[in-house]
Length: 194
Image (cartoon, rainbow, N blue to C red; front, side):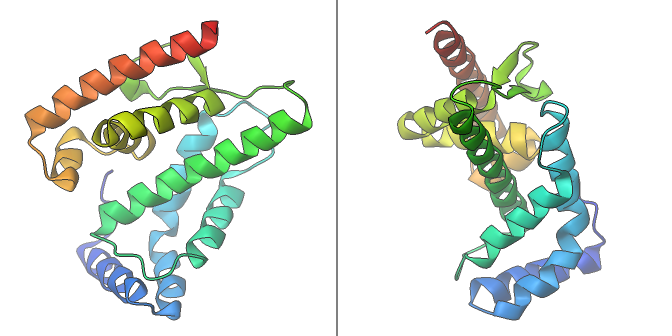
């Protein structure tokens, strides 16, 4: 994820994440204006992948994220990248919950489709709920591979950043990325046929 904040802001973000992690209620309120631009960028990336006419807008997605963050207590944030990875994962969960709700209310009609991010190098569109289910299955089998998919596809982190964040070598990260990508592609194709 590109660093779009100044070094002063990055230091302040880290300080506020630490304070929030230690239980300061006001730290989140101070943090949000500093990270709002990056969170809106993440939300826009997600919404760009959604079908046109989606009932959630990027601002609503960020607002929903904020409501879920408010409920978090004493989170141990490793760093700024950890916060944005968590935020991106939470946004994905919000959209999946929304898709499941729509699916339930329409009894299977109007399924939402999502292109699986350019990073996965697949041209076909994937069902967001099926993608989430597949990622949860992968997480139970190979947690680190699921984390790599999530960080690469949903936060836009570079492989070097992912390797550093997971404390593994770049070669290991690339190997696990390739394996996870292949597994995910096969799993989604099986679910589509199934």
